[in-house]
Image (cartoon, rainbow, N blue to C red; front, top):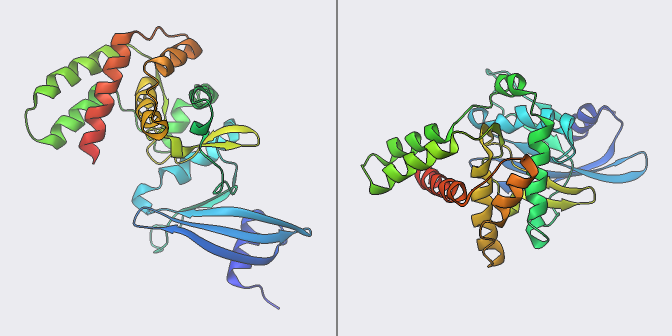
Length: 260
């Protein structure tokens, strides 16, 4: 008897015999579709996640397998697929099932910064590979200019943001998450991992810290101040002054406002 399509898909993706395969739709919108797939393998009940994304927003499908080979600080990737351009189907990635994990912000947020730095280090020598996968280099100056162009008005804040971006330009270029937030930092048995890499880019790591600091404040109701900036500087061997922390907050604020 031939397998049903879902069973055949999971078996082919895992290169293993599976049975009792069933799926549950977890989320669906214009940006993604996420399913949880449960199945039996060698008599053991297992589950995985299946994420589909639009072809024009599929960086994560390309990037996540590389990150997973380099570090365990991201979800394990079991399989992925990029349909030919002529096929009307979305690219997909099949990571481990972490849908029920809780935010790492319930614990010490410094662990999230530590995880971010671990990922930076894991791919520090992989710039050409990251670029080949579609990860763009976006300097603080470029980010601000994009934001200014989108605003289409001359705001008093623009001059300050340009100066702030210039101050940050001396810092090393690293892999940035692009959406570092409490909901994307999860607690697992092996420690903190970071989800959702669709907005990743090569740029100034302090901008991730600025975005995360603001999100921690909203998530916990407590303002971490400059503590996470100082910790990031300690981990990376960079001197992060209060002026740099203030500059990264301003650049993050301007660029995020323009993307809304």
